Amino acid sequence: MSGDTDKLDSEILSEPVIQYQPLPYVPYRQPTFTSKSTFKKFQLFKLVLGAIILFPIRLIGMIISVGLATVLATIHLRGKPHTNFGHDPDVKEGNWVTVLINRLTRAGLFFLGLTNIEFKGKVPVDYDQDKPWLKHSIVAAPHSGTFDWSLIVARATRLFSPIIKSEAYEGPLNRLVRTTMPVSVERTSRESRSNAVKDQTLRLTEGWKKGWFPVVCFPEGTNGNRKQLLKFKAGPFIAGQPLVPVLMSYPQDEQVDDNDLATWPHFGRGVAMTIFLGMCRLQTKIVYTFLDTYHPTEEEKQNPSLYAENVRQVMSKELKKKTSDWTFEDAKLMRQCERAKLQPEIGAIKVEKVYAGFKQGEKHASELLSSYIKILNKYIHRMDGKIEGLLPVVLKKTLLKELYGKVEEGIPEIFQQRLPTYVSFEQLAVVHAKWLTQKVL
Image 1 (cartoon, rainbow, N blue to C red):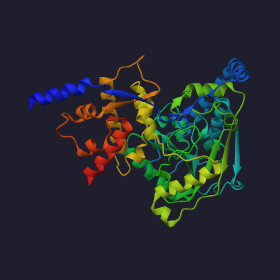
Image 2: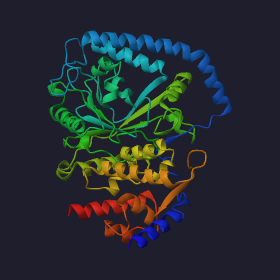
Image 3: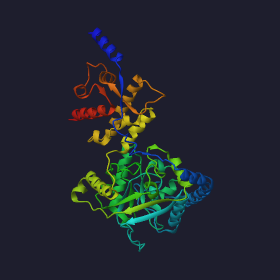
């Protein structure tokens, strides 16, 4: 028996364990998570001119305005808790200091290059400071980058509370951010995500009468490039309260394909370069289009995922753009591959669809990808330190041997039956999810 095992090992390791196949489709990060710009000569000339003339002036103006706003915010919030979670609202939007901080922040945005903020659609009339401008909170999409959050300070005496990632809250501008009474969430922490949902639900339920600002949520949970709507997270829909859908667009950056200077998704131009280009450009405009308030049905109140999807379909119809199943979790898997200097599309599996029903679906996918990458690194023959344009697939015998030990022992039958001779990560993940379902059952 030992001789047979040695022979089997020899056969496995002597076969061409890594195969390559052309990408069967345009890499999904191109239409969803990538932004690029093909600069025209005249446009490039204007940007260079802006870098020489506009950028120094705007940089000084931004430092002064944001610096003053931060100092005022620090004084104004002295003695108040670091976060509003577990506390009552403690910032008044009509207070003169709050208004001054608001206007200085808007000036900072202007110096960053956002020269125009325009409202369209069913914009509420603002005629009485003693009444709410918006009775309900906002879900805004498509989320793409630099200036999306400008809605928060678009009006002098009206503020919104954003849902923000915790690292933005903990930076040097934390006191300035705190004036908006944001909902902070650490996306890698289940406890933090749970607390954020509780905080958000409380605010949506108690509303303006209790002193809360309307909440602004970007339900996609990450940046795309506005070419399609990503999957909506259920968070803002759990409370079952009416919401106002708001569409965001950058007219200058949507007129010509591949000429978008405002977007910074996961792959492509970085955040710093996008901000720099905005400061070098003469003007940038963002348009917020307000749709009719969406009042959920009883069925939607009981099913937040259904509520989220129905709102997404309404927004998709108004935008005339398709919906997509890609999520932030998928982008993280892509980046995991990129860090390993592998083709990012290896991690493109649509986590929520493959691991539907598993609370730890993202964790399952990430751990499986780590194992798969180790196998690739063991057997792959790299060119110039990475593989581009091709997807590697691993011989099933080798894959199962590396994952589970000896092939003839301890291998779940489902892997043997359903995996093809050469296995991509996507195929492995689908069968792995089915195996997990059987284990749970």
